Length: 281
Image (cartoon, rainbow, N blue to C red; front, side):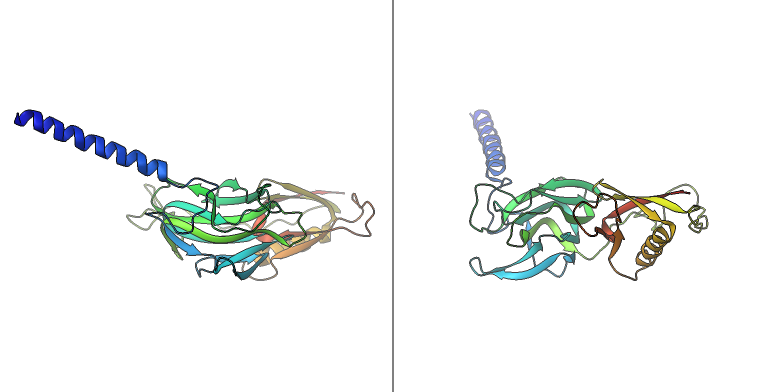
């Protein structure tokens, strides 16, 4: 009798744990749902958190209907945003609307994915809609970057509204640690030999094709005079050293000028992955 009671107790306990686990999975929020407050295990940070570094193309306001702060990505801007979090999960909550951008990039430690705050059936403003979720990351400090890939064509001036960031863990000003946590030194059997960084060679020729590869994989190509290319390189080196403007104007001259008097491309420093110079006479 006691043996039967023990078997029944273990069966009941197993069934309870099984049902609890599956119910918790079933009740977890899904992308597209509204989350007015963070779920258990998640910590919420509003759009005006001091941990968020807005780089370009943003304005800040308060939603009178929801009575909470939001940050709006301006149409025509880059919508660049950076922050670090220490933990294993990330959620991004925005408004969704028929007029918003269809493609926004989010990079976690250099791995780029995309979300969309666009919803053709939504005409009114809403808030705290879960538009992106990443789970099961390795415990540690992760670097997150966001930017608008496809700007909205609406006349209201917004690509989208950011309301909240939810994390399993915490936002932090710490930087990701790429060193060996045991010694604080680069991993390896021997101390590395760090060669002197060579100076950038000057392009040799009368003109050059400047090819700029952006962080989203897009390539931009310009046929320029050598002095224009050197001006670009001087700007890039100065900005890389921490001074100068965040953008550089490149005159496209008569290339595909169409009906316009001139065409100027404004290249954003933080959007540049690499560039190459192909000089010719």
